[in-house]
Length: 392
Ligand code: CMC
Image 1: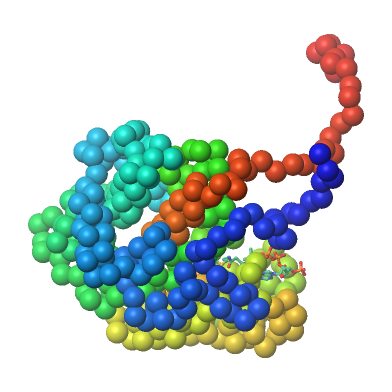
Image 2: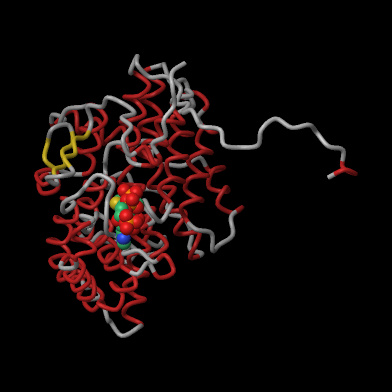
């Protein structure tokens, strides 16, 4: 059946035809459904971008109203699902907790699992968009020992999430519009990025006709890794490490170049972008503004900027075309918004959710889809005879 060649990391393998997101890595261009990311970040909202990614077009006013209200009607969790959180250790990382809870949704919503039934897929889509922010907020509440708050469906998606995360039952919680706007924009910037590791995972799991909840749950685990979504937390830890050592960015860059202890400049480099990541450009521009408004750690921002400047004027990074990626400046903003480092990757997952859903739906509807099943080149032992234990 033909010969097999290897392509480690699928660097040169096209896995799908997709009409969702366009990237030109050489020029630093990113578009969702044809719309430049810069325009969406400035003028759209996360709920509108979710609609755009999933259904292919910007919604009319009425379509958006209906979509938002459908999502709002499903934000509540089944009471039994809330007890799920009791089973995890309090210091558990919120990413595996979120992945497990999303996986568990397929046990609560067995009525919407058929991947080939349109209304089923639609129902699972709405349930995921509505319930994942609630699950994410509960994972946070569990980690700090505070009571869960029921969603308030008079609020928008992001405001509701902020209230469930930072609010307390006994006190009214006023959502700071600057905070909500900043988070909404960061979610837009994370909403899709074509065949990245977690999205490819969602598509691969879904190619076996596994349901949408199961596929997204696997995507969350893929995103958890430090080379993917986990990088946003790793960047902040790196910046704090440099700060603790006296703020010497040149020394750190030398360590990276010498590959000391395998240390990498986290938040730098990208498989596709060989130019400045357009998302990082937007985030960098707004970091000053946002941190100025809501207050943040200026010293860490200063270290980040000096680190970037030093790296970008160094041959090692220039030759390898390594630029800041989306994760380089986000952690500083998340921290300023009040989120602990451990929680940063959960925020990435909330942003990426509509992208995963859009890709799963595109994959399942595509007649060209086949079950993902790569081949291998066997390099193990030749045929040999089984030896009884006494002769080994
Ligand atoms: N720091 C130092 N050297 C690097 C870095 C880095 N961040 N990234 C790549 N390199 C070097 C790498 O050592 C290699 O050099 P050499 O040929 O001498 O061994 C060369 O650049 C090519 O790197 P690669 O690992 O073959 O590139 P890749 O396309 O397989 O990996 C990457 C892409 C994003 C995993 C990698 O750049 C990396 O590890 N970056 C740090 C982690 C990070 O910021 N991840 C977030 C990615 S963007 C958002 C997301 O997907 O979550």
